[in-house]
View 1: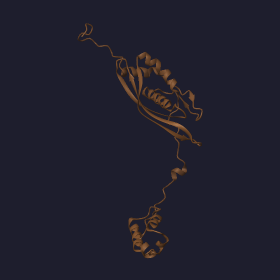
View 2: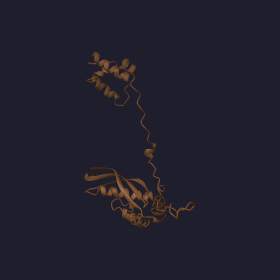
View 3: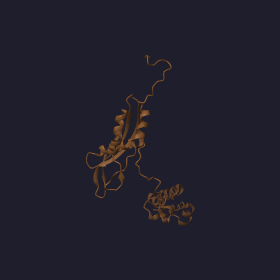
View 4: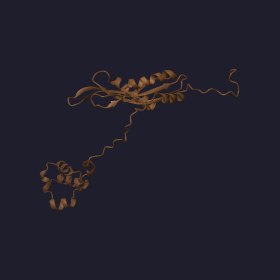
Length: 222
């Protein structure tokens, strides 16, 4: 123990710990608005560069480093659209380590998914994963008044009133034997064909199937 740290002295607050720093960053970063629009689907979004621009000065101020570790990544070629254009599809699971100057850290996981016609699918997936890791870890708002509860789509009347068709009753074996005999089976080339025809409605019973097989075995339908 140094001369300055005698028994009974109050230790200074350890402000370099990551758990003490993150609340400070959350309190200072503020909102990042959706100031960009997708030209194809016409929806608003906030760009990764806007998120980085808001976060980077605070990381430097408090001595925090963030680095990614790719845990899983899939990459495949797919066809999209009416003309089946070939695209590269990438899905990435990435861990982000937030490390303070004293070595303390927290780890968060994030998913990213993207498609590209050339070699940028993995880049886009990683950028998406990073954006949501930052915005969700730091709870960064968009400053929009909209909420997910604002719109509540309702199912169409046809969908809400649709009912499953009633199941057909199973084949009546007694009626089959007494009223139809075996002549009706002569229209089928085999027991298999007869069973398939009757089972199309999933109404065939095991007993009826055994009966049909027996008839064909003894040759009464031939």
